Image (cartoon, rainbow, N blue to C red; front, side):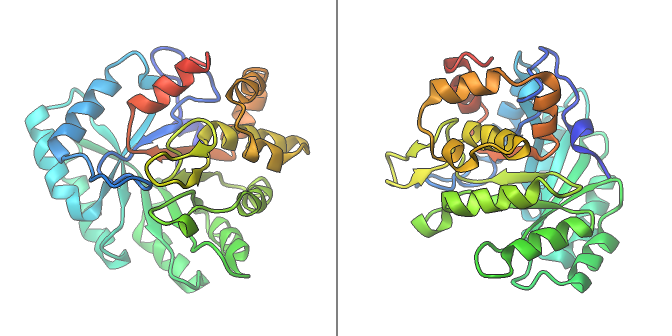
Length: 293
C-alpha cells in the first residue's frame, strides 16, 4: 500500500514539507458548504492539468473522481492527452460491488490514469467482514480510504477498526447542514486517536479556508486546514489541541506552522495526509497570503 510519504513526493518548486501534496483535487464534487454545483468535467480536467504544470504543482495530490463519472473523466483526458498519467483517487459512489469494474476500466487506460487511492463511505456498523471485503476488492498497493460515520459511541472504535485493517480513516469536516460540521471536541477526539494509529488519515469537505471562520454564504463556522495541521502538530507534542482548532488568528497559526522543523512537519503529515478541496487556487492564495508559500 502507498505510504503518505510516497504520495507527497517533493514537487517541482520545493513546497515546504508541511504542505507537499496536501491538496487533493475534488473539483468534480459539489462544494460542501456552498449552493454551487461541481465543476464540469472538461473544465476540471483543464484546471487540473494547468495546476499540475504550474509553479505550485508540489501542493497538489491526486484527482478525485466518482466511479459514476469515471467514463466522463477518461473521455476528457483522452482529448487532453496528458504527458503522463494523472494520479487518481477513485471515490466509490456506486457501492463496493462496483469497485472491480471501475478498477478494470482504469487498468485499461493506464496511459491516462495512475490509480493511487480508493475511497468509500463505511456502513453504519464498520464490521470486520465488510473491511475484509474492501481488502479483497482493492489491491494491496492501492491506498484504501474508509469514512466511518461520525457520531455515536462507536465512532472512534470504527476509526481504530478501519486502521487495523490497513485502511486510512477519513474525517468529514463539513457539509450542507450545520450538523455536518464536527465540533471542536469531536475533531480533537479524532486527532487523539489518529495520532496513535499506524496509518494516516485524510480530511474531506468543509476546509474551505486555511483558518477557522464563518462561511458568509451559509453562516456555518468552518474548520481551517491550517488549524488542523497545527492541531495535529500539537497532538503529537502534548500541547493544547482544542485551542489550535478554535483559533481564528491566522498570523499566529502561520507562525506556529512556520516554526516546525522539517522532521516535525513530516511527522504531522504522517498523521494528516491530505484533504480534498473543490478549488486548487484558493489554498494557494490562502497560504501565499499568510506568507507560507
